[in-house]
Length: 164
Length: 164
DNA sequence: TATTGTTATACTCTATAACTATA
DNA sequence: TATAGTTATAGAGTATAACAATA
Image (tube, rainbow over all chains, first blue to last red; front, side, top):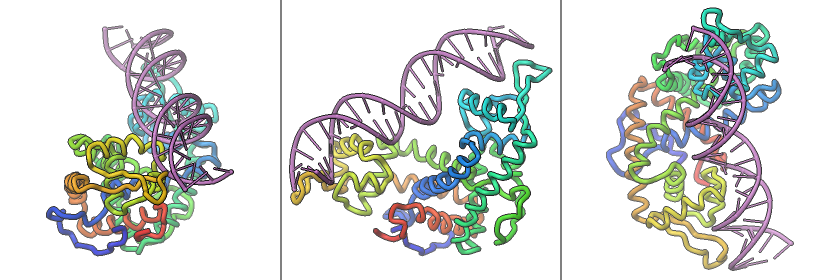
């Protein structure tokens, strides 16, 4: 059942009887575990948790003006990222200063060193990922990446796809 | 950064600078969340937890002779599925009887009713998934499915792909 | 003595509620 | 009074350790 390579073209769902493929979640979940297991050593080597890395990634894209917004963007609880931000700030990887206009809020931005670290880590991670992807036929590889990108975009908070 | 639709063909990783695509895990994780959120109402409607559904799915494929092996196969702790098996058994969805040859072990199998429920639930779940996949161009849809199937197989305990 | 299943306990992660400061 | 951030507390989920039955 895991090895039926029959492609049934672009037909819809089967009528009723037995499923023709595993559930998507049943395939996506183990894949995610594989990916995270591959990331872990890289993150460890640089003293980053998964959440810390997510913060670095997101700040790099969009400088942000409240911690709550950042938490939202990376789908974390606002209370969960506080320790993460404390650590990143103390290591000089991010800057975090009160907004002059509203001193309740904290303006968050990535430091040069933070960006350097982010690049290093992401490069290493994606290098590992490419090794995985290399096991696919080129056509499938491209289709997989395009499909994944499109489907994951549907899940984002903004749900539009582009910028933010 | 999320909207660079440039495809760079089948080339390897970029030399050093800025990443050309999000990390795989950063796309797979939200996708998994979407899929699980879509499954939840279906499972709820039939009084199944995620783990219970995983048990039904796996028993359908391969009748199994110890609970530990089942737990292993679905990547759960052996202590975690006990309550699940208790429930499924009491509802007549699975059978669980001591192995005559080794009365320590429990032979696990799916009942007819269990198979019926499994089919109903999986059919509903995959119907929802097809709605998601329908948003992809047919070529990407097929490549995505093939790539996903191949990559997820690498993560399985057997790691060979087929039956086990 | 080793193994299967089970129960009891501890631990990790995450979210909720209460508090401080600004507005 | 309302909101951003923080801290303290409680809850869910999971794994570890101890136990009973069988081999």
